[in-house]
Length: 119
Image 1 (tube, one colour):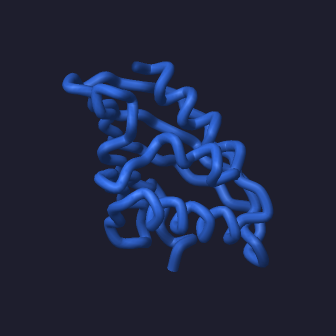
Image 2 (cartoon, rainbow, N blue to C red):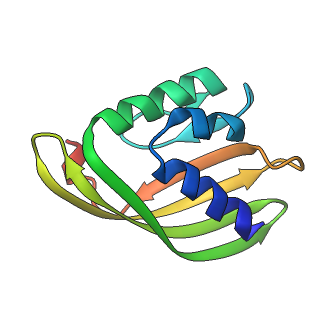
């Protein structure tokens, strides 16, 4: 299942929501602060479009993946790039993700080390 995370992160780094579409269903739930928890494929893709617009460029690099069982994983990521009009951005993120039996994302939640940049 670690390869699922790698494939998802590759699609995320493409910054193209059409590549992310295959990962979500109408039952998927994500929580990426500072946004509130969001459910449903269309709303999730809209959130990613909004996130991508905030950056001139951004990249995520996964450093560690820890299996938790039952399709759940915890992984560490370093994100870096340039926020539009705000300069360089870098942050460490911990993510909890759960996949369905068919490989779709049921739940994804990010935890940021530094949240000042979002205020």
